[in-house]
Image (cartoon, rainbow, N blue to C red; front, side, top):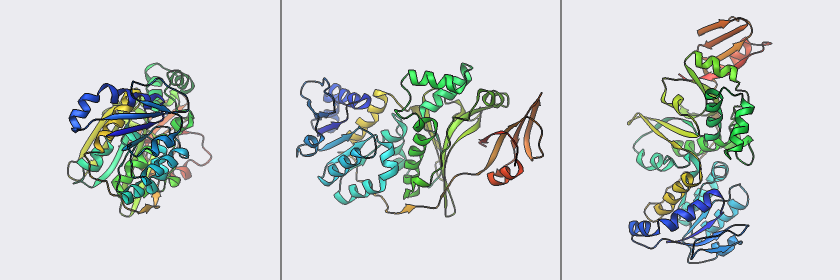
Length: 384
């Protein structure tokens, strides 16, 4: 197996490192030699002996010896061109590019089916957590009713830090940035876009079609305050950025929202930069995957797993269906914080001084907004 890695950033260099360090064991595992022939990047990098450096990705694509192209440059422009050309040349592709698979997965994956090659993207969703392959293969006997997850380690780290270190959002954001957790464009993390990319990919596989990503309306954590986290804690909840996907009748619901989750729920106890994905299925009921969602070797581990799978797996087949009837999840219980009491049906009420906290009964958001017309309040969904 001859491999070309395009993109030698944090993850790309980690992939080269693992493949070279574990070459003997992986080669024995596959009963064929595993060779990294190329490392491609804009700036020269020191690579292990025997790995050729190039600045031109065409060197990788045009080499007939290369079996697997690993795309790790990110983005949805040149990365897409690289992947499509690799597919057309009959080369297998492994990528961690969640934005590209979420936006252009239909075109890419159907092209892979047409040219009888693999495109694997485990690292695009859970980082180092095996979740895409178990969903697609191990749970094939099941109809997946619902997917729930914490799919962005950065926002989970920020929310955890706000709780444990008594920080406000901006303070926790600064620390996360200093540790290198934020995307180059921080809005991808804190506005829920990254989590939306990931839940869209899982929804594609669960619903046997391709979600129209432009129809999603993710909400991020900018409006989460330390005050609301404190009141949530008093009531036995934590605030988490929750991604969900489910199908009801002929409607599909995909949602990313900051949500109060009971501390008795396993998902609420996922702290720091960890991720979790929970599948609710008809036969095995609930299955949960938990682990680190980011990091050089964490993500590289998933990429290498996909590379090795290329020679073992059957081609994943995809429907050409585009799912357009996508809706946010608007019927929910809601947490409300106001400076005075209001007339609303609730399951829980708490007040002190000029603060009034409600957990409403399940209600449609439009009805709630109508009841709270002209009011000033903070509001978040409540799970369960």
